[in-house]
Image 1 (tube, helix red, strand yellow):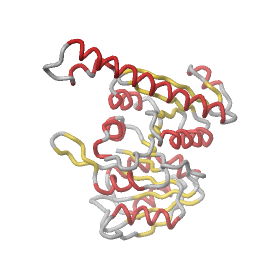
Image 2 (cartoon, one colour):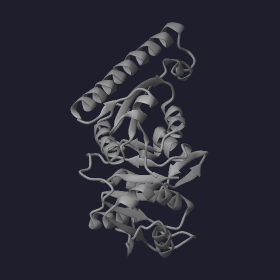
Image 3 (cartoon, helix red, strand yellow):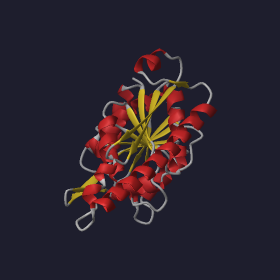
Image 4 (cartoon, helix red, strand yellow):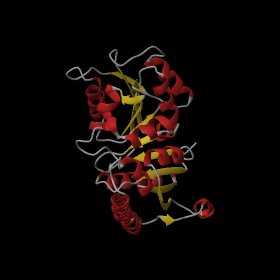
Length: 292
């Protein structure tokens, strides 16, 4: 098993460049196709938000301004794509499945469409082996990111969160954050290709992180069935933060990939990220493979 189709949503943020470099690395490791997707704001979606009391002319002007801003952002994203694919050697541009399948080496394509980003990206992700997402911007409230929530919790696919700076390596020293839940089991299953090719694998476990379910010893036995040898290392929270202890243990190992389940709590029908998930998303400086 390998990752053959990778989706990379691009929004024009500063973190997009590091995500692009991370996706290039994924493509080279797995000889994969990366589809870069930019979702433009549909100006028609602005009209219902305008509210009552605005004239037709004012609403039209708001829609026109949204269209201009959306077009400018799409142009910047396209320029980023063209610059990267032009600078990176050994990459083939392939706008059709036939071209990508026949190519020798990694391939890339680009698409810009209008719609609601969280809906489009979540739905498109379901047809890919992996989605690579930019790291949340500094100061951004990750719990309010609709697109991030949609991909993590509504795509049914694994998500690789790129660090703020592109990694020098990925998947050679892999950590598994294990707590016995269905989410962590799904993450391990999604990470098997990475774990197979890793030089070293470490299972990180903590009594403060463990939930009802199989223990770390159980997941180590599971990995052995897949011919993956792993060691179990316990970790402790740092200043009561389980997420900080987890990232510290991964850093001590020199990990260049962390695998873990993504957790949320339902509040007024909205998904609120769990504390450990949120801490890792905001503070990880290595690629993080998450699965719901």
